[in-house]
Length: 253
Image (cartoon, rainbow, N blue to C red; front, side, top):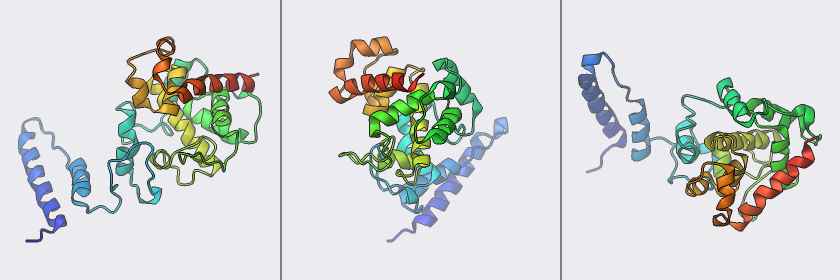
């Protein structure tokens, strides 16, 4: 017998809604079935925007087919509970910028002490938006792409800040070759790593290059501790940290 997925979904939602209403009647709170509905969309395949795979940070995903909830599964679950796009957006919340700035002790940027590049206004805007120093953004761009917006790595990373397609889609970047989108998305991702690792720059850079999960698995909580176990990271990541720090000194006056 063929079961209509839409009918199954509606029936399950109704059953869940009735059950939750009965359970929560004593405290006057009625639970919503929105998240359940979204889950059912994915399980039953009734939502055209649902991903066809589990979604990892580096996967190739068609950004036009990603909804807000499916992008949560793609990227934000990889980042942990410190960032939830349903309740707090780095791009729209000043509190996140203030928090990150206090961790870095740099204010919301360092435009007055940064060597100019061809993308000054875009970098300055991203710096102010996400609380990442301009010199650090420039250093990452320099190390990743040499300020070439059209470069593609052997692994498929694209643009100025070398975003993988999956990462770009999760960050809302539809065209990784567009400098404005790439710098905004790359800076957002870098700011998330800085927040995740308590403002420890070396840890954030290692996470940007090798992935936050790999850095977390080391069980360290500071840059000093990271350096003591640096040999447990890929040689590329070990070199990446020093390259970015050297480049940052070049862009700081």
